[in-house]
Length: 87
Image (cartoon, rainbow, N blue to C red; front, side):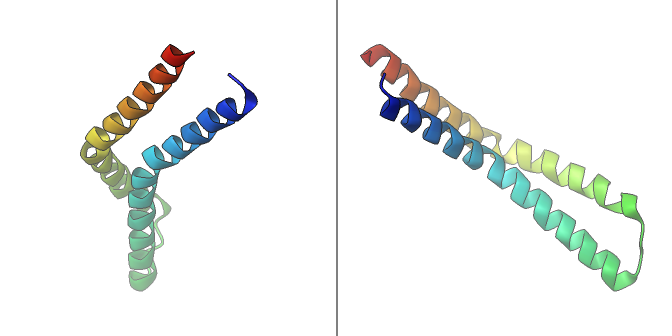
């Protein structure tokens, strides 16, 4: 493996990490902003109110996106295995 191939694998790994984490982080962001907006509108300033709905939403999004994440990881591993076999 030369330097370009190593950089290519590293770039693919970083892109895979972004693809795996983005759906869950976006759901957490949306729920957090929504609850923050509701707190601002109703003037309820309870700092722990955000955590329970956000945990439930992130857990539900993990269950929903788990097949997609598994497929992405499977594709990446097959790609890496094919590179190893080609050496």
